Amino acid sequence: MAIKVHGNPISNATMRVVACLIEKDLDFEFVFVDLVTGEHKKHPFLSLNPFGQVPAFEDGDLKLFESRAITQYITHVYASNGNQLILQDPKKMAIMSLWMEVEGQRFEPPTLKLVWELCIKPMTGMNTDDAIVKESEEQLSKVLDIYETRLAESKYLGGDSFTLVELHHLPNIYFLMSTKVKALFDSRPHVSAWCADILARPAWVKGLEKLQK
Image (tube, rainbow, N blue to C red; front, side, top):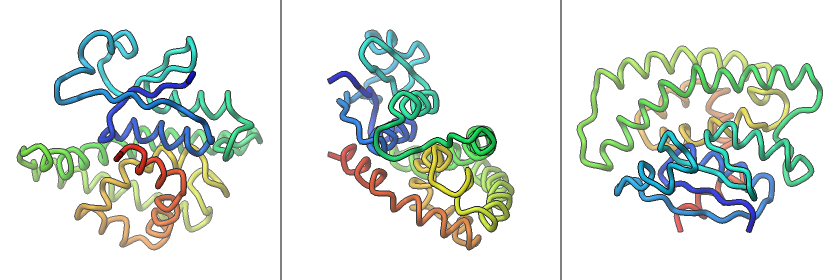
């Protein structure tokens, strides 16, 4: 099998790549990387990602890391496969790219901290830092206010159809739906409906099932 994803089921970035491959109806091999033993910080994994983070990706002799770069590669190279996750019209693509940047620069920082404090730390027996949670909730609220306005005028952040914009959001939203932060999403009707829509994507559900086996 040409495509390999080296990652861990608990990694939001790994989830992002797996969901993209399933959306594109592509076969791939999942290679488990043991984060507990620090496998990602040692060779031979470091030859795939010198920063020692999952996932790493192989497609034949091509090796990539950084989940958003991987998903963009997949959607461009395998454009004719599965569901279309990018937009062809240059102006629409520009809007989509804008919201992809918003996800990475505005949404990811506070939600990643919240996932760490409210999901990962309790799972590993560490204490949650309430000050970080409070600060991150305040930052996220400001982002979601802007999302609510955008989603009142557009079905999806990136346009009229599900694209990489939504796919990139999915892992952190999924984790936070099991925490008190869910209330921040639920209190905004358009954001709440958007979350329910994208979390129900068959490819996302199938990806979770594959990673949990």
